[in-house]
Amino acid sequence: MCGIIGYVGNRPAVPLLLEGLQRLQYRGYDSAGLAVLAENGDLCVEKSVGKLAALASGLRGRWPTSRLGIGHTRWATHGRPSDINAHPHRDCQGRVVVIHNGIVENYLALKERLVDQGHTFVSETDTEVIPHLIEHYLQDGTSLELAVGRAIGQMEGAHAMVVFSVGEPDKLVAARVGNAGGVVVGYGQGEMFVASDLPALLPHTRQVAFLTDGEIAAVTSQSVSYLSVDGAVLAKEAQTVSYDPLSAARGNYKHFMLKEIAEQPEAILDSIRGRARFEPPAVVLEDMAIPKRRLSQIRRVVLVGMGTSLHAAMVGRHYIEQIARIPAVVDNASEFRYRKPLLDADTLVVSVGQSGETVDSLAAMDEARRQGALQITICNVVGSQATRIADGVVYTRCGLEVGVASTKTFTAAIAALYLLACYLAQERGVIEDEEHLRSLIDPLARMPSLVGQVTQGDEEYERLAHRFSRYNNFLYLARGVQFPIAMEGALKLKEVSYIHAEGYPAGEMKHGPIALIDEEMPVVAIALRDELYDKMTSNIEQVKAREGTVIAIASEGDKELAKKLDHIIHLPQASPLLMPILAAIPLQFFAYHIAVRRGFDVDQPRNLAKTVTVE
Ligand code: AGP
Image (cartoon, rainbow, N blue to C red):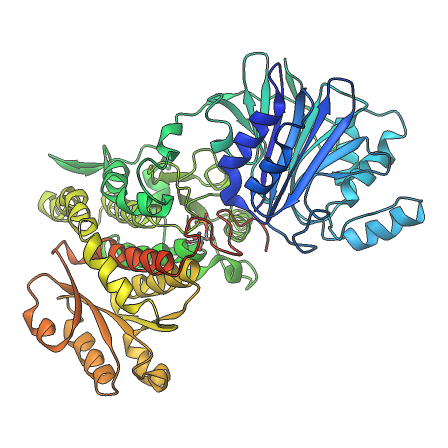
């Protein structure tokens, strides 16, 4: 969950590290720290609780010139956020310095052993055992990278880390073990970078190499060598990535979240561009090197994800069943991995995630691989771990998402899942004739403009949000393919406004949640003119009969519902299966405006992180 950056080269390190951390802050933001090697050989470390600004202002004007250093922005696991617990951490002699993402699961046993050997500890963190372990192995005169490998050999859990030592003043050592977040090496001219993910590197280089599980990189300003944790030399090539760093600029928007909500017309367009072919109708998925024969073998689909991505997967289940006609189930990845799922070569596991680094989803993918299942991932981050494990990838292609609360990656993932279902139908011969395929693909063409129309309603959503910003509990109800959108609407409100909200299938309401309904618990009901409309309006009546207040997301022109309700948002009509994309948008705006009204930091909500790399 933490952000990691390292630099070695010919430019002053501190400004580069701070700039990198700025771009990584969305990964964790309860404290931050830097360590650099001064030109006179001194190790200088500065750490500060709170956001990066606190560290940066503490440093102003009093930092030595240096050409090598590391920086970290933290999401606390062991030890509360404090100056002392912030990374980097050092060994006893102050010569080895470490930043780390992950959990040293056996740190108590290691710490006890190290204390017995005479090591002294200052923090409450698990990470602090790492510099002491490395210090121990360096005593033999071994190189830093081999000492890191030997230290890793003692550590349980998953890790991403960067280390340097005063004893080897021109080298950074980076390592990745398991799925505690990525490590990417960036190649510059006479300079090299390492980071937990791409955004920190993109202003400087597009030539990168990703570490996989069990790999170590020894990086100097001129070269990089790769080895396995047990010391074997590895060959690894850099690749060129094509992300546009400018897409991360906030522009005139007050917050990234607002910008990213507003970007959804382009996000949907980018995600279908070139893939949905209209004349003659076809779906082309460019990163799907799975033979037709293998696709025909699929008898069952299991979709997995976490949080917002799980909600997208829940929509995807409807697509896989209704369009591709394959039995499908959906599961929370963290539950899936531990419930001893039964998979085989005829099962397709579809993992959904924006980051491609969520530990629970990666562990589910590892389990799927172990059992020989076929895997496709829906992902936004090029080169992330999920994309390397899967047999096929559908990138959502919607540019960097900086706001911690996912918005555009959610609707783009739904569009990608729709394409995937159409593709499976096409490749497996489920499509009856050209007209059938056309009826599935044509509706996609209108989606970017319909999404644009819905985002134009911002002022109306803001007014509604202001009217409801004082309430402390909300219920979100929907049915069918819209039910996951009710879940997502409630999650968005929780995440950014810190308001208690629950999403329920509307049919479930009278089995318990109805007891909560009174004038203090507004109900957000998605009641579109689809096959479940009558059922939804009955549920709305049940709420009204108990003095409940209803905010409805309704279809354009639904005067009947408008007569019954004071608060109603109308959506233009798209194909019913694509309506979840439209219905999600007013709910994103609603959560955003309530959070802003309440004065919260919408881009970096408390306790959250963009990439969740711990269980
Ligand atoms: C959504 O707003 C959150 N960022 C969170 O629920 C997120 O969707 C979840 O942690 C999964 O992340 P992933 O999409 O990167 O796998």
